[in-house]
Amino acid sequence: MIGPTAATVLAATAPADPDLTGFGRDPFWLTLIKAVAVFAFLLLMTLFAIVFERKVVAKMQQRVGPNRVGPKGWLQSLADGVKLMLKEDIIPVLADKPVFILAPIISAVPAFLAFAVIPFGPEVSIFGHHTTLQLADLPVGILYVLAVTSLGVYGIVLSGWSSGSTYPLLGALRSAAQLISYEVARSLSFISVFIYSGTLSTSGIVERQHGWWYIALVPSFVIYCIAMVGETNRTPFDLPEAEGELVGGFHTEYSSIKFAFFFLAEYINMVTVSAVATTMFLGGWQPPPIPFFSHFDTGWFPIIWFVLKLLAFLFFFVWLRGTLPRLRYDQFMSFGWKVLIPVGLVWVLFMATVRAYDLFATDRSPWWWSFGVIIGVLLIVALVDPGHKKRYEAAEAAEEEKIANAPSLDRIPWPPHADGAGERPAVTAGTNPRQEN
Amino acid sequence: MLSNYVPILVLAVIAAAFAIGSVVAGVLVGPSRYNRAKVDPYECGIEAPAEPAGPHRFPVKFYLIAMLFIVFDIETIFMVPWAVTFGSLGVFGLIEMVLFVATVFVAYAYVWRRGGLEWD
Image (cartoon, rainbow over all chains, first blue to last red):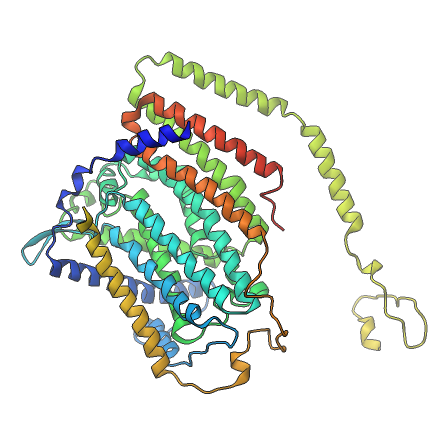
């Protein structure tokens, strides 16, 4: 059943999207300018985001934050980068040398690439040439973003594996498991956007959000926001770098500029997922649909809207870091697999049904009938809840057993005393019996 | 059609040149003073064990996650072209997708029941 469906569907997507005719016709010098601009934008955003994060977290914790280097400390991250560059480049003896050197490069380069299809704005004129403020527009835009952003996991796994050390290996495996677990939820959250946009091209999706933004597909947006934090290894999902358990995670053995590249990749990924969220759910460069602002939607103005929305997401990331503690690993994985994926799937099917009802329903009574039957079945299941009592009792018993078997101070054998008495000394408040020995 | 990808190649070349250039420059600019403790694998300050746990063995549990990922990622990838052409497929497309998701959901319930989604 699966095969023929897929074939039909793939055949149906074959014709090229008519919106993309203006692309791929820029002269080479313009392409070069745009590529350098995107590259510079990402580097600057990284430098900015690091100081921004430190300053905002400092404010949240009532500290001052970096304020020495440059005007009000805004050049701090640049100074840090230069300092890292001047540090010794250490390669551990047990490391697999070529892979160890390649890993940071593999993790940094794909981070830059995803930004190539993000639309910064509509058509403008540069030196007399009409061109869109977007490096490249692909008919498979969002698929390309998904593909490129998941390449970064290779850099992480290879870095951990090639270090020849315990902590990096564990950190890298955790990181890989985490990235792929939340990848599914992230892709699922895009599906309902595709149902409404009817295209995968990023510029097309922004175009179709004129008037109403896809943030209206609330659960998709929420699932994406959670998944993007998981994807970028940020608090509260920064398990690969849990200092108490794994030292520095996959980059424990790295120093100097190679360490800086993992840092760079993390922050660029943060900017990229924010930009994708902006494009998919917040209307990209479209101004907010408020009467006065909505006039500023031509020329270079839209870049301002785009950057503002991006900054809002960056602030959200920092806010999370300033607020939430880190999750436990099993909680994190359970949340991804047992909550986000089923909720994402059900929501996609629900949105598809609503859309189909809008598009195809001529005689609406069978739809209402089937809707009623589904709700009825769900209600009956919820009311009857087979096995509920049994489950509850089993959980109670397990809990009691756990308490009974829990490690307790009473069962730890006390070391024999110097005076020969094997008895445990009485513990009184404020005294530590061990200090007497 | 392929000309769409040229700008991406240009960006990739710039990024790769920057990354490789910086790594080479870092080696040239930075100092290099040998010290045995520096090149040992990190072990919280104590002497590293003769054969560390890495780099060649790791728990098989991670394979399970990878395999589950493949199942669900393929499911989502099937949904992408379906979603894009949703308007032209009609109610038939909706019913097909419900059946497809239902079959995958059986596998999902099985994995969950067998403890494939338990972590400790």
